[in-house]
Image 1: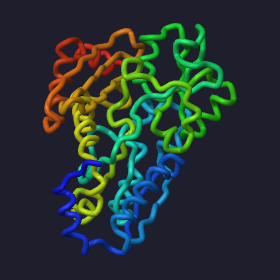
Image 2: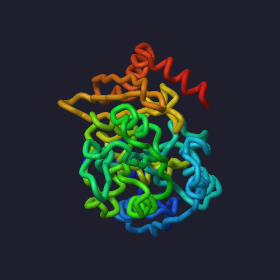
Image 3: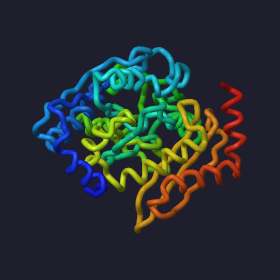
Length: 326
């Protein structure tokens, strides 16, 4: 696994500064606790003299389940309580699924490390059908994101798209109860919780371009905590970092949020970073997409340039329409 040698050197030099206890703030969903536990184990390996603990917390995003996320304040609702815990000194860091982290970090906080990516693609989950193309007209598909909704409405107008909220287990229970014919979830979450067998098909990027950061974990810390920055630095995966930085830069330049149906997905191919992206109206009737390649170290620049290209090709009008509907 690739990592920043610079960060490794920092971590080694600051080895003596590591305290006897490191606290990770986490949401209390099963997936969030798995993610925090994964980082907990990695940190325990790096700093065996430390006691690494997880502080479980319930966030507003977990409490409000009767409305689409875009209507209640967006993804930031999943991390505010964790940030308060860090400000108050009750936690040293927080672990997030990066697709759930707002594109603009709050003042005083930063994403310090991005870990190696799990499968970043969307998964088709159904008890009776093998894939999107096998669904009959009128079949009900559940999804929690405007991105997936726009993709489905554009490519599969004969399907009925319904909102789907709740943690991963809750969503699967709703499917099993017959409320949906199929649901679309992030493949990474299913894999991490040992539920890979529930995946009937992994959607290709051509079928469903992933969300920026999907499949990657981000470690958030107080920017002023240089000690914590050093502790977690060896967990950073360079390849994933370049890809995610390009994706988030692209999204940020287009005002990416829960209110904007947008996909952004980058990979490293033949030594180059290849970024694909799109933005669409919520009904999927208008969609502008593009791609760009460049040097990995130019990750954020690639994201900004692709965003500008899409604006010039019609994304500006789509964004204006979305803003007018809010």
